[in-house]
Length: 454
Ligand SMILES: Cc1cc2nc3c(=O)[nH]c(=O)nc-3n(C[C@H](O)[C@H](O)[C@H](O)COP(=O)(O)OP(=O)(O)OC[C@H]3O[C@@H](n4cnc5c(N)ncnc54)[C@H](O)[C@@H]3O)c2cc1C
Image 1: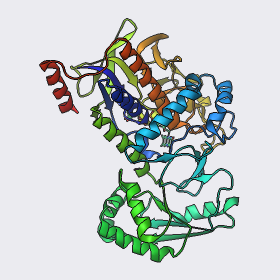
Image 2 (image 1 turned 180 degrees about the horizontal axis):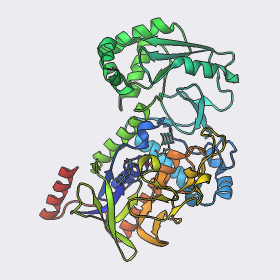
Image 3 (image 1 turned 90 degrees about the vertical axis):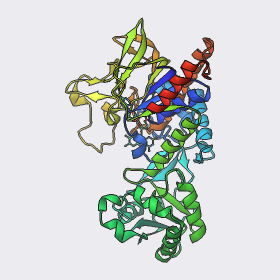
Image 4 (image 1 turned 180 degrees about the vertical axis):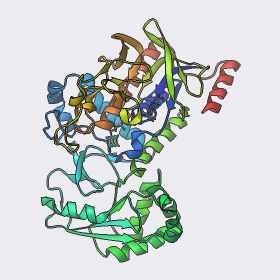
């Protein structure tokens, strides 16, 4: 089967790349082995919260020169500010068209989002249902915050969050209360505690009668508050609409907090991206895994998957966006790390004792997070120091940056995915390969076969 672009990995990096390719008319397929980090994510887009030397960042883009000086091989240093901005602007517009509004502070600054344990994380873009606390004057005009959970829900403990929040100096004068609201159907759901997760609650609250009953209990439990904070238990894709409805029913200003996985805020981004990609005619081979490929004359010719071992998938360009250790895009052995699909060149720290900090919750970064696949300035990968001209790398498997310490995970994933797509589109335009209306009966049959596979 022949494609213009084949993308390995269905996380935010792979999907951003695939959508941009499909928008430009490239015949594109994504192979995604499993769930991406989005199922565990806050659904906010971190761009740059801290420089590698630990200096906190107020306005991410204003710090790109300093970042380049400290980390010349950082993916942002390879792309430059203009390309990163362009990618994020494209992403905001694309995802807004699918009903998810991502916004930043008017002065381009980072903001703080509240975590489920009552601490704050700095980020750049948040969804419309997340309250953006400014970096300075963080509590703003808030006089009373109510942290509310669903009775029996284990993945958000408002008392813990309230205790931690109250310790922060900007919240010393703010009244912080907690409540637990009973869910209609609570007793039926309690029979099996494993079925009382955010996604199960969202199914109940999709029923308008039950949402009305929930709203009534919420008013009774909270009384009055300037901001009501609920765990993210509303809908996949339609969560924002459900919250708007609940605000109308209660008169409260309501915001959501990401919970333990499954994180509906992250899943909301994934659903929006996947449905947009499919609308553009893109193909996703979900649950399949790329296991290797054939190289010839410095290029990757085809790849093989677990489900299609004897049917090579051929493309002009390939992208590997298989994530970090967490998604098995990288594998750690006793003394080295490995990119397991193609054995790509990696950057690693030789002595395992220096891979991590002795304290898990250390103030400094864990060095292993900067290990990963090494690429040139075009984000092309190499094997045994030989560049593979048509194999690009995007997202969390890249070396030279730390998504956790620097707070730049999704920003890097989106901008590298987008930038690679732009290069593939430019190459396809040069060789006159764009667009793919089936021309012959054989091509039509092949396309039909591909859709059946998906
Ligand atoms: C728990 C957690 C929470 C995070 N929260 C945030 C956050 O709130 N905000 C933020 O900005 N960043 C966050 N990050 C940072 C995160 O690294 C990036 O945001 C981003 O999600 C990385 O995307 P990715 O597409 O590169 O990789 P991933 O999301 O890891 O996706 C990789 C995909 O590749 C697939 N795959 C792997 N191997 C193969 C194979 N051989 N064949 C086919 N498919 C394969 C995997 O199954 C997966 O679908 C978080 C990271 C983690 C781990």
